Image 1: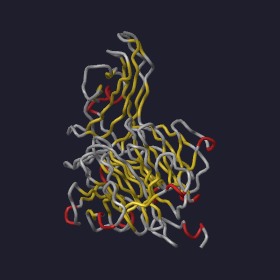
Image 2 (image 1 turned 180 degrees about the vertical axis):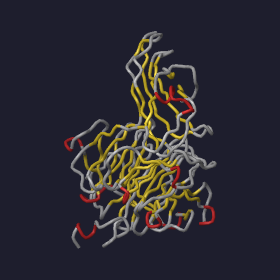
Image 3 (image 1 turned 30 degrees about the horizontal axis):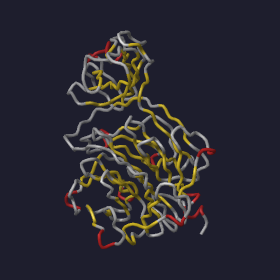
Image 4 (image 1 turned 90 degrees about the vertical axis):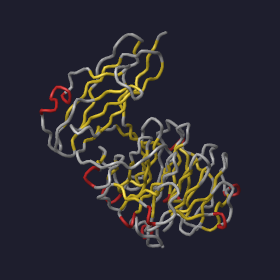
Length: 402
């Protein structure tokens, strides 16, 4: 069978393609849903190079990116800051078709390999001789994640939990149920599992402790062969919506397509998704043979303590019509500190009296007046008049001085 025949689409394997992804992140709940949407414009940077139909992507605590380079039948490491093929290295070996990749806190890399196995690459391993199998035989493994305790989660047509040290099927447990080609898995700090249920065109949550289909929740809607999935500390879920050529956000509490938003960018079959602690997304674009970093934040000029920087504009685009309350500018979750609303942006000056329609934009001008030296983190929240947060832009600035 030729590679062209193998890579037809996300629902085919051996004539059928499957997709996988990882993220280990924190927190998630499912409160009430809401309807009005908007999004912040993101910057995109391409990392590494030399990939061929990459599907899975993962990230370690040092900012190194790991890629299941499926078309090249390889697992690769992209060091932090690497933007060309010259600094990309190959890990392990002996794979059949690696689709998903995950990395734990000790630097062990886990691979969902289509050879009916989940494989582990220890740190420093660059050949097949040091690659081992965990969890016994797991047929057509296509998605993988690992939590902070070292439990590995693998997806085929079920979702399996492999505890640390498990090397046979006798210690593997099955979670949730009702899936059809789950191709991306994420796990948060509370033990909730998120699944890109590709052939069901759905994104689902397996609450901690759930072992049957009766307790599985469906999030968002309107997907077409979703592949990668990631979750942030606020419970927002990010999806590689492959057949729609989009990367989308499901806000915490969103249970329908009406509150799902698409990130800015021209994506081509986005598959794997990962997320770092600064809110940057990493996307494996199989259609572009690339791995991209999406940076959803504004970096303000380095500013001495007690002084103020220029006020850059943060632009929001509305996905649906509606009115907004005054923007809220936060520093580490609190108002009235290092970051503030300069008051001259159109989101502020238009006020709640202006009705926006889909496609409209408005701006918030951020003022940065550091109270202490060092890196400061902030955010701009755009809210509907109901009080629901409809978009968030992250801001970073560094204070200097005593």
